[in-house]
View 1 (cartoon, rainbow, N blue to C red):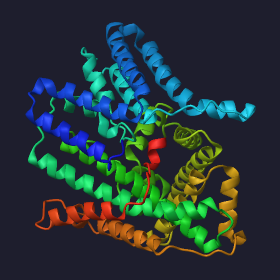
View 2: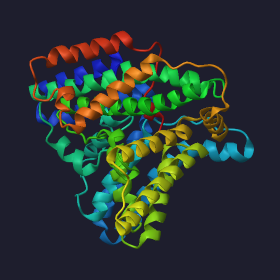
View 3: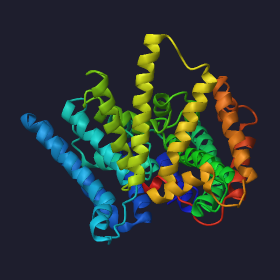
View 4: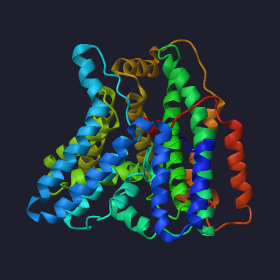
Length: 452
């Protein structure tokens, strides 16, 4: 159920109205029912999987709390359950097709990767004693089925969401305004900018080698913008829908293309995922506490797993490896610069290098396979065809993105975010919605991260 479809807006509107009219004890069941309806609209067959996993978490957490000595084995059992489900649905086709040349044609359950990571936060919090196990299974089911984040995050931790669901208020005017503001901005990013860029990217990348170097470089740039605007647009809509319901979700993006190095990029891009990998994988592996060699090994392992998490193909492994090398290289550069007291000549050069590196890393991420990646890179190096076409919309989207990042750098992002409800805010928001409806690309264009 895409966020811009009438069905979702009807579901959200009904949920808001019922929450507004309902007494406190009814709000959590109503929100749970809305989440199950959202999931069933996508595929009714997977609703038992969502419910069953949530009930398993409820039972395991209670068991962990009552059998203190067995907490760790039970936590490992919970990890095996969730990672096993994720591995089966996401990677079984890859391992079957590689040796056999066939496929199981498995359907990936909606948002399973994000649900897996959120569920692990609940089990980890109970195992570590940071949170008491919930006695009511409805609490865990409501957490697992919170529909604004079901499809593609942000990854919400149990410590963040469960207390808010316990004290779910009636939606108020402030929540509705802030929710509509964020939702409108996300809708504009997705339908007006990202989807239009996607048409150009699909044309050039779909005929890799037919277009000249300039067109292929423009397509690489367009995809870097598309995936940012698409995913941050989704996050804005999810955060907006959650805020309208009275729930504050974590931010997921903070102007990532303003980063001056790979480490800063990952502090700004898909922040809920970056923080999850940091807290639940990188730090348990030893983090940066055991010397530079071990730190670089940890960074490489985390980024390789991040790549594998995104998809079951060698292109994602390559993408993860490139980012791992970037993080290790930046760390070693900082060590060398500290000893020799040298630095890059200016922040502008550092930003250009980081942005170029990130943009090039998106090439295998977007490509169908390694052969497709090679054809795109060859075209970028001048071995492409004679066709030249750079759509003017690419430059318009680039200008808007640069403007937004520039205002952020000057501390004036309020001009775009419309904080504080200036007098012109309703007109601007309604204009954004009107533009989204008017310029939406024809056909169904799913969120890019919904497939992960």
